[in-house]
Length: 273
Image (cartoon, rainbow, N blue to C red; front, side, top):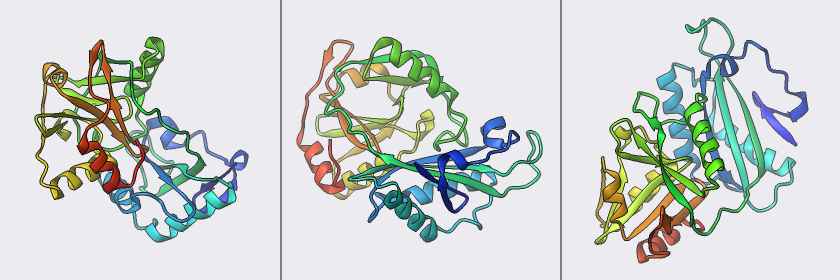
């Protein structure tokens, strides 16, 4: 498989990364995961906006990065790798090597991969609450940073439980997110989702769901909610760039598989669930 390394398409086995790489040594960088084809990267503008906002917060320069050029690079990579249908794209950016905790320059370097996107399950039937690793709010918590140890530990726990997903809490025991998704629920025609103050990722799909619900005058509340409030829901779903997936069973509590609002979002966002 070919990849993009600092603007050039090369075979993945030809990538030469220094042992002083700051992403490796300090987790000093961010990433975006996207879905797209050689014709269109879904929600490209939203991904680029989140990516550049994250770089600004980290103090990594964005002047070397051009949105249009990189978008075309990605489309060419998808063609080069002969990915049929949709590709799963990962865009990883880190700060150029130099310095210890305090960097000596802020130049970005990056790798982009594009591989076939694996289909998501239709529903999540085996979901648990997970308390062992808490998510905390910070200036970077809404972004996808290279410092992903909490989610790795959560992934290990998910595998041990043979679960479809785990619902996570913030440090005050409020519902936060799942391992790789934002979470929404519906009760009495009101949609609820955890606020960014819980430390959850500011998902691109989350953003588009909220915007489309507001356009349709459907009430949505972002806030801090306890486990008991989620359990009282009529319908629960998770979202990430791959789409929307209903949760139908949380520790023996059963929820609806479909609801009109889900069909509305599917048609507005042109996604599969």
